[in-house]
Amino acid sequence: MEYTIKTERLGLRNWKGSDEEPFSEMCADPEVMKHFPKALTKKETISFIRRLQAHFDLYGYCYFAVDVLKTGEFIGFIGLANQTWESVFTPCVDIGWRLKRSAWGKGYATEGAKACLKAAKDKFGIDEILAFATDTNIGSQKVMQRIGMKVIGTVQHPHIQGDPRFKHCVVYKSIMQA
Ligand SMILES: CC(C)(COP(=O)(O)OP(=O)(O)OC[C@H]1O[C@@H](n2cnc3c(N)ncnc32)[C@H](O)[C@@H]1OP(=O)(O)O)[C@@H](O)C(=O)NCCC(=O)NCCS
Image 1: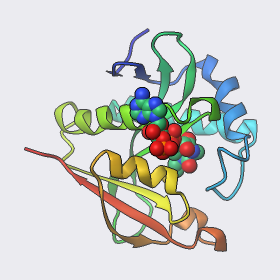
Image 2 (image 1 turned 90 degrees about the vertical axis):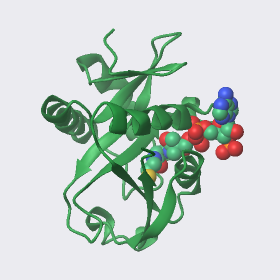
Image 3 (image 1 turned 45 degrees about the horizontal axis):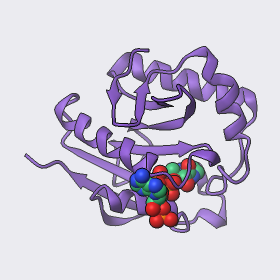
Image 4 (image 1 turned 45 degrees about the vertical axis):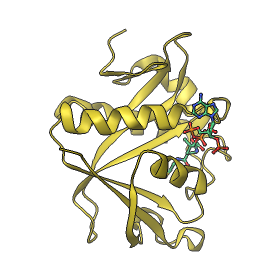
């Protein structure tokens, strides 16, 4: 398997056809999607995968599909994406993650995200990365804090604007060390 980024336990790569089934399953899980307006249908998940593949083809990075190296099991995504929706914080490159429930509590998100921050600078020449999470998504914010990112403000994400549960997104920033 060709991985763009490898860590001790994880391989991060472009998306492939066999990810459609397991990724659709996890994006249909209300617990995984608790901090988003809704769970995704299979059709929505597959079109998300297509957008991620197109992003990878253009830039060499995306929210990467993640495998556990030891078993080859696909567990979700960790990666970087160009964000162009309108706000004072954009355009920017952000870092994000979504793992299936059985992969939580093992340090995988933190391990993959650390490697993505390093690759952002060393491989892709990106000096500044932002991250967005709803203010209630403490688990995701803990990952941001563990990889050294700092809060720089709050924003109303246009994709979740209509949903009062997600009124504020907290914005984190990471400045790459020279
Ligand atoms: C956000 C998300 C990836 C965080 O998962 P997570 O398992 O809490 O984060 P990590 O993978 O970094 O694992 C850290 C946890 O594993 C524990 N852990 C166990 N073994 C570990 C190891 N070998 N190394 C490091 N940490 C380990 C840590 O103690 C920590 O647990 P704690 O938070 O209770 O202290 C996950 O909750 C998720 O996919 N949520 C749904 C999607 C989502 O909301 N995405 C973010 C949108 S902004």
